Image 1 (tube, rainbow, N blue to C red):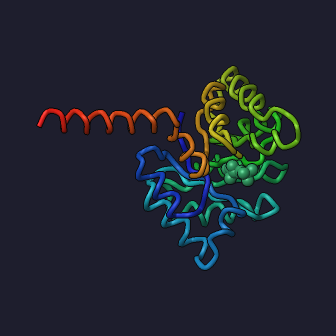
Image 2: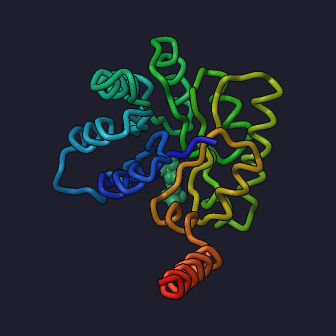
Length: 219
Ligand code: E4P
């Protein structure tokens, strides 16, 4: 499973990148708004320069025409790595059909049902992003959607990749992997929790202590 970092914060991305585990990045308007003081273009270009992998940037237009226009501008900034995030809606579907035919990769965001995912795949979206945590928040099982979507797209042999999004804790990542998600997009705070295990810490401490005793005794 590929790992994307779900943030627009370059320092968080750098920390994850230095671990050697980053395949790409997803941003959204809310995440971008946390980076005030820099232009959206500068934020995106510094992420692309660092990661050299797919970086999703969301459009805010409301019509297919507006979305496509914005998408082309973003894509022109780096056709190798920029992916256009389009929200699921009728105009979004139209835009994704147009953009896919132009060879511009799209990530259909705010997916909350298998039907939405199927429609996005049908118009050529390269990625679909079901929002696990936000579904869990409503008292339903977000991971079931990931599982169902992966099965469905696989059955019909779509190339569309499922990005498990709105990841809130390490168990989401494990379950997304078990469900066969192609990608999980994860905030740095969750990545850090994935690394940690108390028994690993205890084990390191014990090995250090025993080694120290052994060296002292062998002098
Ligand atoms: C995905 O691409 C979104 O940026 C993100 O996962 C949304 O997560 P949230 O529900 O924590 O805002």
